[in-house]
Length: 144
Image 1: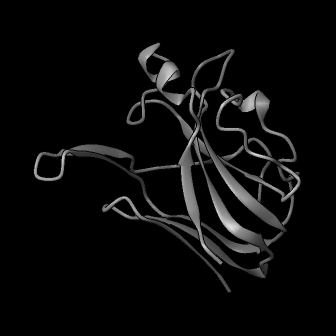
Image 2: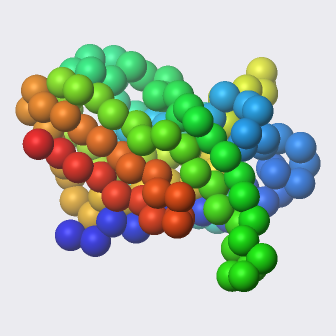
């Protein structure tokens, strides 16, 4: 199973339109089932997401806040790195395939940034679920 992370294509339009502030805004992660079909070309806002998990099993609909967010530029590699504290649910019981990242601060439109495809439906059963945001740009997850 290959875990992949991709940006939504219109994320750059939202960022340059002052709709996204990674460090100062409320950035959240919404978990979606395998019935959600990410569309990098068309999806731009949280309202474009479908099949988000309902509240229950350790998850609250509307997303989980990412804390400890930083943005740094590495001149040696010419890369900008977005990092955050690991996201963890201690006693998760749900089925999900995607984690969509969005900016929850704007009152009307909530721009999508990117999404993680876990490669298959993951099903923690009253155990920990964790998404790790590595400072080197890598994203991984763990389920027990």
